[in-house]
Length: 477
Image (cartoon, rainbow, N blue to C red):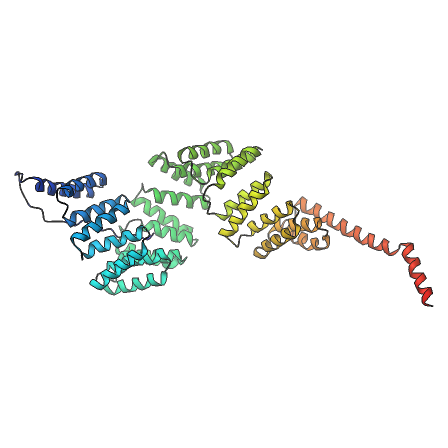
């Protein structure tokens, strides 16, 4: 979701009673004032309790309901915040700030129609109220209606051309569309207008990373961590970035830092296991994956990696147990599903391999590996026509897919179409000239084709056939 506005507490005019106690209303105001101090100190639970004490005495103070909504927002209790804003509106029906906060939380909770209706109501009440355009950028971006998000951006610009939040929010819309360079420009403008804007360098780093500019991405990750050294979200993404660029030691340091902040953070254990596995220690990696599962039994990934470790040790039964457990997870990465399919084929479970591959194709219809393994699965079942169709699709997507070239040649042999195999073998050998299996396959195909030619020639020399031809000639005379 795009960046939501940082709304300010509403201050009310407190009466000054000095040392005198004028009863419960005096105590309620003091409690509300204390709540503000606690909120500013980041003590949200205590601030919430203090506000509730004040509201219990005087439930007709709309500002206190508004402030309670903001406090609930700060601890991500958005449904409860909505209820508080709605109470505040009953007391102050046309208060634009309350309406704006309510619309923002409607967006946060996916109630987009309500959010848009509320923003439009604000616009009709006061067309110059800039937040109703600025925050609508987020709503439209979340709905995937990016043209309307841009329209809101330009309307907001007519009121305040230097709103940092507008640039931030339209940057999110551009990022969602894959327009990373434009997103960077917008976020750099946000940073220029408001250098302390939350997570701005982190977002710039994400855009540079997505655009392939790793040097700039690293620079902005580090800039964000200089400002917010303990931000788990930034540390996590920086760790993943470092993994991708192959800086395993620095990535390891980041994931260990996450465990210092939160010892129960299972994803950090998962990625430490991945690094350990990559560094050639499957035993220690398996221990880390097991620890991750103890912290979060629903986490996607550890069972998949434990299956790999089990196969490394030749424990096919154990690998099967972990693969089945991983299948119960919500896997959104086609490459992981393809890899799982290859493992299911290794343990001779073609049906579940096909299940993984069909899910992979559903996520990425242009995955040559998915079609390749569908071909392998079909060939293993003796369905050679289907196998060749899948191999051909894999080669359409990647004409240099060595596995599809090699295994389609095997399929041609198995289906008595050896004459089609040499072209595929030649292309595969050009890609992998030192591959012994391909050399043997090439030799076998040449031998089969030679034998076919010899058999054909011998059949032409069959004396019985020669006599029959001579007999027919004599009869014609």
